[in-house]
Image 1 (tube, one colour):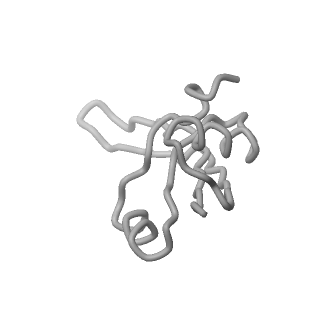
Image 2: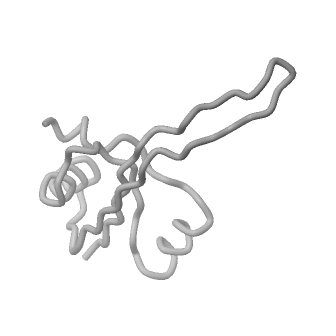
Length: 88
């Protein structure tokens, strides 16, 4: 797996910005098949920093139901894997 394909995008929310400001931790949405070693190497090569720890979380698909004029619409969101990277 290429380093550029492992990290999909940074996650920018209020909670993740608090982690950046207070604890020097950055949050990324990553490929579901990537492990912690691959994530660490990808962050170090893409951003030129040294990584201390990597924590990962896997979120399942969330089922959603909408009530519309044409009836009930069922769907689900995509599964994602999130990584919190602590810099040295």
